[in-house]
Length: 292
Image 1 (cartoon, rainbow, N blue to C red):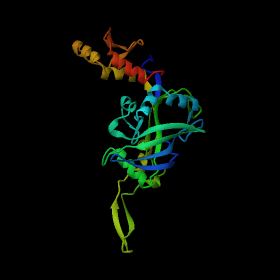
Image 2: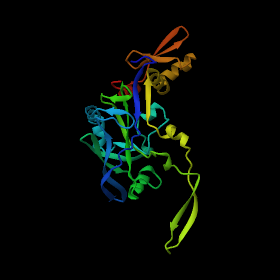
Image 3: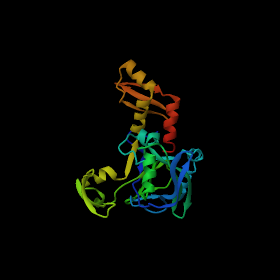
Image 4: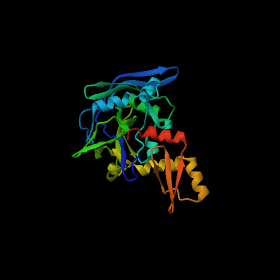
């Protein structure tokens, strides 16, 4: 297990919406459900994307061919969210939250240096992410998909290489303006054509986005994960650790990993207490960071 100050891997949330291709769009009305199915581009391979990352094709194919991903696809559960969960804890970023999902990938394949996929939106009810995406696409919006996963990174110059299979979490649907002109002013005037053929003016208020916040709100995210982060997952998730700290009045922040068995070490002055964590929790975290 890595030391507390040693990076064990990186959380990647791409913000490369270069590809906005929709083909074979099929509006579906099935058993009262309304959604759309279409083919699109999910990701580029063997080239440097605009975030200066290079995903090796073999590594991505292996990542998407794991039993877990294949099981999700087989059961129509390889879902993505409406936007990346930016600013959330690592435990949240590493999972897909059902209330936030808006689509699912039902098939993927490699086409040259691209990963293409067949995607279906979700009919999850009025005002929900999937229905909003369906309606947006039917109004000619081009969706764009962005990778989220956990990976080791090899830096060469200013390029980050993903050469080993990452742990794929999802392809999220992102909506990121690429230039400042895409943002609305506090107020603007629109001209609309009425059914009588006469023009009319109306002042409408749009949400103002400070352009200075663009990089903070919409930039891609690369988050280093350290040994202390994994120890923190055990501290927050283990009832055994909480019970020991309460029983002996120990500061739970003095925690570190102990070996590779899922046990943790808590320092209490000059004493060390070794706590066995729950097997299910240890297995869950080990699976999350396998190979890191």
